[in-house]
Image (cartoon, rainbow, N blue to C red):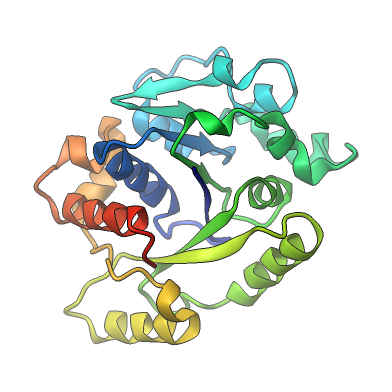
Length: 251
């Protein structure tokens, strides 16, 4: 069983898109997958859920100890989702004075993870308490980077936070994968940026580059994964290849 946090402190890099479609790709390969939406914006949840009605239970209710994890699960075409809600937006302040506040997620889901082959956590686009909880609860981190100028800008802060978590809270955590998104091989800049990312992270960079593909942007508005929305697209091809890399332990 693998637990993986998808992270970048910047928004708009394809983090949620990658969480959703890597998870769907792993599910297509016969794995039991859970995606945890830890972002108060709930983009992962609403990328896959048609109804706008308020959910009875969410990850917020699990963190509060109101419900067991099983009660917060919703399913989508073979995989499970632990959805987010707007209530999570106040969690940073609400849990600030809780004892061992960085381990609330880990303790809430203790023993539950064994039901799955892969647990994928979509982190908020910041380095706040929720992200710290994700890092404390997983063994692996995937950093999602755009293949564009300034991709590595500000990354040192993220690396520092991961190192502090490793030293103080979760010695098992490792950065095991770098996902390059929005890649256009026709642009010299994109190729140069990917080269810089590979120089920085070495063999942690996945061979599969996620090409810029309009279908990936369109799929969430139809509440579908890329494999459901456009199975013959570059996006489906790339995320299928990336899921295979992850399953094979490459990166």
